[in-house]
Amino acid sequence: MRIAKAQYFIEDQIDGVGICKKIEKAGRTCYLSDGNITGDSYIEFIKKIISNGHHSVLEHEKISVRFIFNRGVSHEMVRHRLSSFSQESTRFCNYSKNKFDNNITIIDPCFWPEKNIENTLDYQKFEIWLETITLIEKNYLKLIELGAQPQEARDILPNALKTEIVVTANLREWRWIFHERAINKKAHPQMREVMMPLLDEFKKKIPVVFDDLCYT
Image (cartoon, rainbow, N blue to C red):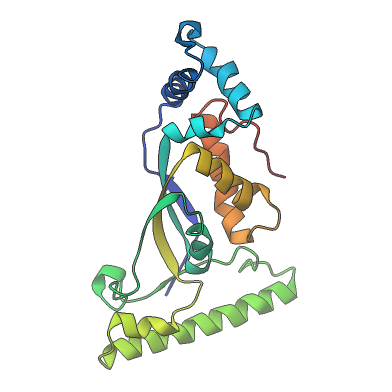
């Protein structure tokens, strides 16, 4: 068994200024104000459309992100219906094969740090979690050995199982995803673990569009 950290990878080579200029050009069609475009006019234009709630203009651009996190969290991600998803399939991935090093990969629970010996209760929780996951892996591999198909053996796999999922969404939908999964303090801790740094990276790569979104 391997324990991995949750992470993400942006799949696109992002030209942030180019994205903003395309949004501005599309948005100015509504007002036939192309003549007002300058080298940096997109800054105030995008600020204005966001403040006015004219968010549909942001739908002209999209970004794909590959997430590696647990399957429980992935079930929350796929609720964002205005997105496209391609996800690792436990029906067809046989974790007993050499391709997977003959074991399952589990995502580290960020709320129970393995080495947090100062908090004895948290460490006890982690130990129970690890004991349970270890038994699940043993029995999953045993089921495969007995001839069970991956789609049958997967019934005992846990929410903590690592999954990869590529999410493609337009910028308007990404704003909503960040609002619900990073800014909202009620979001799952393991979701915020990846979504907060992703929001920071979007801000660095794309001017203006995400500047008003902040988490604490």
